[in-house]
Image 1 (cartoon, rainbow, N blue to C red):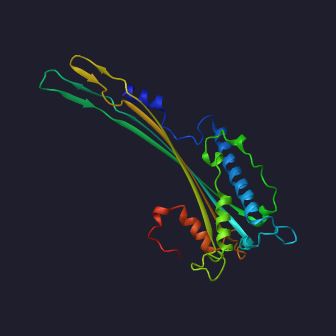
Image 2 (image 1 turned 180 degrees about the vertical axis):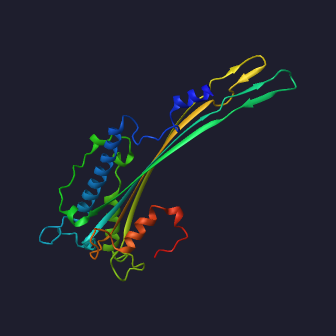
Image 3 (image 1 turned 60 degrees about the vertical axis):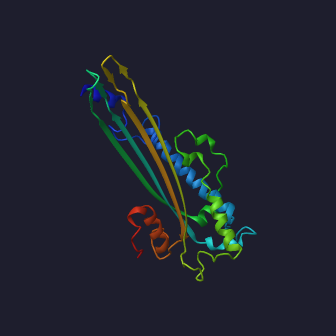
Length: 267
């Protein structure tokens, strides 16, 4: 038991609540969350300004952006989910061969698994963002926190332009067009990064009549899944608190629990 405890303590993974960040203490985890939320706000701001144009105080929009008029009065609901799973396995084993026709194999396996899930939801008024100051295009100084949500282009501008272009070419009706086939005033973008790192130790000894640890003795892995859902739709003006209209809110909610809602019917 001392051997098992020692190896699990050495690996660390799965024996305590995982840290959000890859390195450093609690302050590094706080910096990671801050970096992700900052990156998301910047990407939403820059994308909406680039794709739909600035919305000026007199109610006018930048020239050439009339096809993005359906975004007027819209908001963005953002769901951020950080999932960290750590696991360690210890499997000492051996084979004893006292004679040529008889052998005895023995082994033991102990594993530990710990998971942590952090969820955040926040809301943006797109009209306010279109009046905001764009973020610097180069955010490379924030790439040391261990999340591809920070380091990558989330393709928000590309997604919005695809939607606006489809509306402009009349291939589809605008998302707030009553003639739209689905009559759903909502569009959604989801990005997921899942990164798995693992390591193992396989020391072995072969004696005259015995082999010790012919297979993996100790393994450990850490799985990080960072999921971002951005749902855009008209802001429900009948509500005191800022939120999207019901159809958009319902899609945003159910998208966070896909396996539990496959057979459900939206209200």
